[in-house]
Image: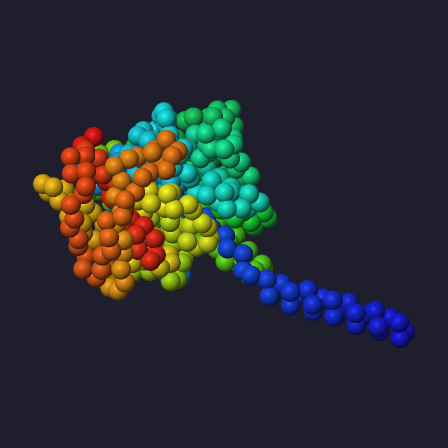
Length: 413
């Protein structure tokens, strides 16, 4: 009996020790971003979405923009694949080079979030659950030499090309059925495998708006998507309650719509008007501004504590809504032989540095030659200088702040 008592005590001590070790382990950070296709912000405001509301209650929602600078060098078509790649890369189409759904020639020198994750830690697991196969094979570039043979560890996609299991009916209800399977698989594998970075894409909302415009069918599709998001959210909450994990979810859309609701692709205000929702409870001051879909990339990078090389950081077009932020809305205007810079100061303190380059080697995988212009007081929100090469037709200008980099191009292309 004495030996049995001692054995039981040892087991209890071991179990207590394991529990203590688990509590002392650093919290594992996980992130998922969800794209619900083609839902402008004014529609989302009017449709009951109880599951999305639960997520927003923990974090928030902000109005945002898709489409780059209207009539500027970064103007980007409000088209689906273009919008997906903007979220994936954190840059506009003038850089990532996806201009339509045919995805002819992506510039893989602008890495996606998935490559950043693997570059930081090849052992980390990523996942894609999508109603469109090209998201993984073309945009993310799973297994392509151009992406360094990037591996997507878990994926569930391509059902849309299975016309036997999913007959392509005229009403396109088969897309809803595929969205159902995609969301169920995403919830299942999040619960069982807990990928470190996940992308879920659902299409049916865009199909219903293309077919019926502003309509009850479109509203119904949004409510169906909300249920599908709810499945994933339930899986996340179960993971957090059972394991030492901290999950970020970011939900957005790829573009708005024309006033009729049928089309998109142009630069009207409604086609450009989108939204970003998240469960993150401590968003920074930029989240209270009108942001952009390029903001999602640096926000996830900050949450997951990922590092990116300086030359890559200087190319990103987004401003993070997670983590420290000093300035936003950085712009440059050339007037005569002078360049005038403006920005919004969010920290109201500190100094920054201005850099300028007349090269674009990054586009081909190289490093640009930047020259220092000098320091600026961020609270001034403006700065004027005369570049040495005043006859140049091309400038890349970067404002370096304590929290990161912002860039703006002056180009005659």
